[in-house]
Image 1: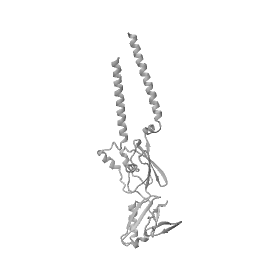
Image 2: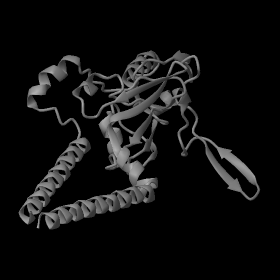
Image 3: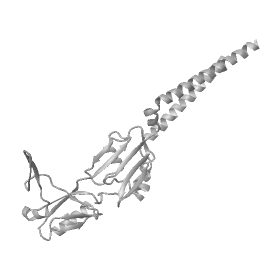
Image 4: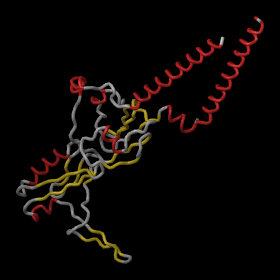
Length: 281
């Protein structure tokens, strides 16, 4: 009889250890990215992958545009006046050129900017390189060898949820991917769902939403793989977060109750075996 009980305990121990190890392996897999991607996946990925080197200009963007040339005076008219604001006692005095912060060109709801000398220009849908080429061509009609520099002044994204550093982030690079954006936020925590990341985006005055699976190679073909200005990324918490954050007392109570029930059942079963053994004697 004792031998049978010992074998049962050993069997139960093996089963419990197997379950723990299995759950550990599953958890580790859930924490990884693109776990099904390897060298042989490149061909299938490249069939649908579309590289993006630059983001397109959209309504509401603020652009920094500065024109330079060997003849500095010749391009002054093509640059927005720079103003310094100084406070003298109770008065505010504005002074122009000679320093200060370069003001930006706002892209209005029609997708236009008001540019010095050239007037209203439609820029929506262009990349900064395309706009640079357009302005260079127009200014070249009046100035020899102009140099045009363009940058986004308000390229921000917002990352919320289960990341190490959530918040609104400034982006100073072109063609940023979802992985690079999450890297800016310090990567996902161990409680973030890697197979269900939500991206919300405003397109032509309407909201669009997409769910991205960071473990699936199809993400490379998604139009949301590259992040656009003002995108909002939300990483949902997994079940482990729900357990650890607010239900610990409940789960401890359940575990304690189940443990007590198991103890009672084992005790009753043991007593039953003892009684049967005494009767046989």
